[in-house]
Image 1 (tube, rainbow, N blue to C red):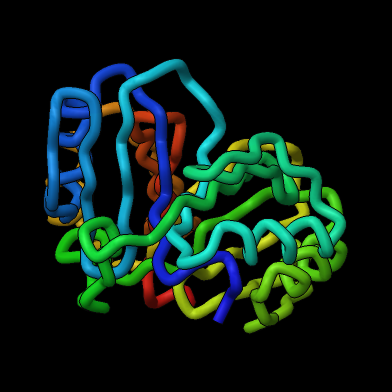
Image 2: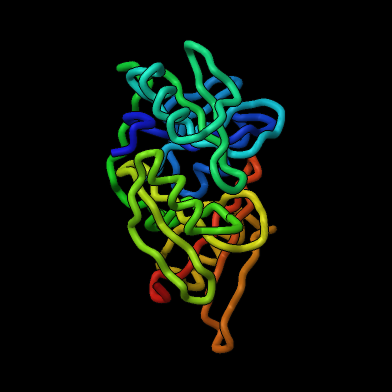
Length: 231
């Protein structure tokens, strides 16, 4: 288990949290809590927080028992903390993913059920584009993650997990992190999603099979869905 916290959610800054949450519910997420400026959603596998505010890179927001202990371990791992306070620690990881640590309470810790997303299927990973996947994996291990899989097919990537989140460090041009799901994609599925997301991108193989479906979500986070038959 990572020493960063007991639970974690993906934090996205958007223009209007309450309104933008509707795009997430259309993709199988449920709203657990909502206010004018913030919404907490889950699809059973991951938790996502939409927060109204100036656009910032996505970050994993961990909830931990002792910020002092976590701070000591983060600094011991060679990281530089951008923010140090009694209510939050902030630091940057490989690629464009940032991390924040906040105190865990009985009220804010939300554990996932593990159920699959009714629309998107199963979450594969939060993909983080990096220059060097192996170097990123070394950094992750210093933060309590362990290597789940390494692959050299087409694009070199290393998947790491802390039992809460799966991160896939992928060697590709610099860009924002994105979620990767695998689903049972057929034409009816495509028609339904395209009706909600007319700007979605669809990539097909030579025989017409859908290889990739990409939805752009509020907060600057793309969701990439591949057919589970390809995996």
